[in-house]
Image 1 (cartoon, rainbow, N blue to C red):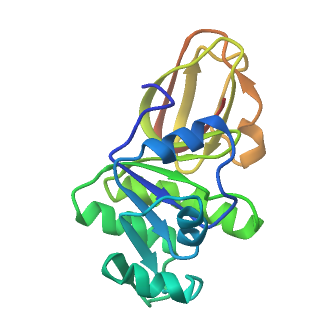
Image 2: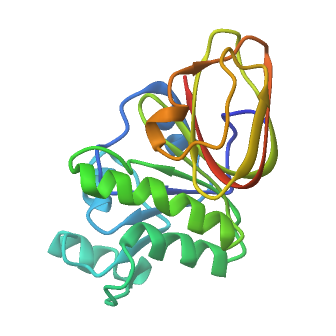
Length: 206
């Protein structure tokens, strides 16, 4: 597995608009771009046209609601956020390989929520990653092999995994019970292998 791949679809969430090279490239090369409601405002102002706009419509500019009425999918239920609505929409279209950008920043509570939801999306059948300006979050289960560069920083956040172990990392890992315990590890090879019985989340710094 490589940490950067061009996906089938990209979800642009309404956090900080991507500035770094990796998320900006993924967004610009996205074959199918879904904007979460208010995120469409900036995307359109940057000169792009989304393939779909999804959300409850509360933060989308009125002029864009009219101009892009044919691609606006208004989903008013409040039991899930717009990012989740976008993922469900893409899965219903048969698109599984999905990248999310713009999911962090602005509000820390939204950031934590958006990151933790990656585990649910994986359970729903999505091959999903969330790219920030600093690295990529990858939900994992079982055995994961990732191509990296020696010296690249890696963090592991345990959700349900038992018997966690790894090859190619500077520090040994174990069944972490707090998120901070798996942070700030480092690759000592060009490929790392992580194994665990259950779910864990990787963050790979660019």
